[in-house]
Figure 1 (cartoon, helix red, strand yellow):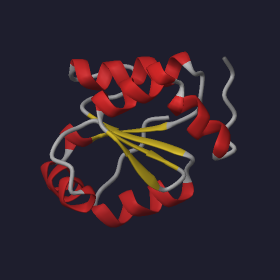
Figure 2 (tube, helix red, strand yellow):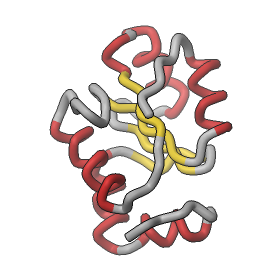
Figure 3 (cartoon, one colour):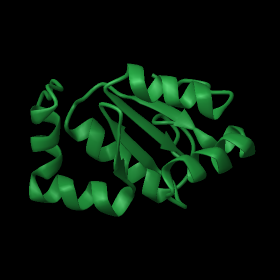
Length: 112
């Protein structure tokens, strides 16, 4: 589900109240860059439910999220309230099986 977020406080609440949140360029239906598309493909491959938030729709949100995570790029993946990382980290975790293990450990239903 694509969610429209207005500020970093709404973003924090969304992170806290959803199992998986992806801050990305574009949406999961229309990724705005290859890195975001890669993470969407990984999450879709694992068949997990997640919230996607388009940071391109609001420059203030984009800059606020960079400061909040202390991470300069997007996408940014959160699992059960914890920042996991960007595309390279998510890709490495997926390939090694760590991402599936993380989802299982956190009680997230994965339908592989």
